[in-house]
Length: 51
Image 1 (tube, one colour):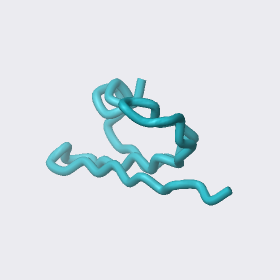
Image 2 (cartoon, rainbow, N blue to C red; image 1 turned 180 degrees about the horizontal axis):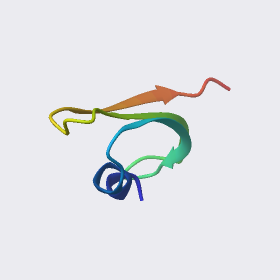
Image 3 (spheres, rainbow, N blue to C red; image 1 turned 135 degrees about the horizontal axis):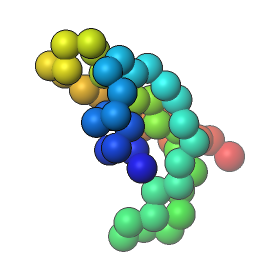
Image 4 (cartoon, helix red, strand yellow; image 1 turned 180 degrees about the vertical axis):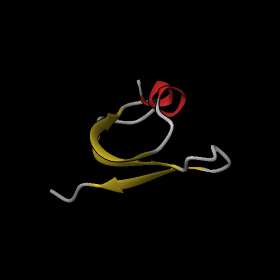
């Protein structure tokens, strides 16, 4: 789902809610997906939500 957004969109700057679960208890986070028009650099920032 997240990786496909990088492939499908030319320019991207979006924040989505997500739950990390791989080898850990479920942890709600916010993901900021950023990609430029040139497709040279892609960034994925993870913000841990404070309860």
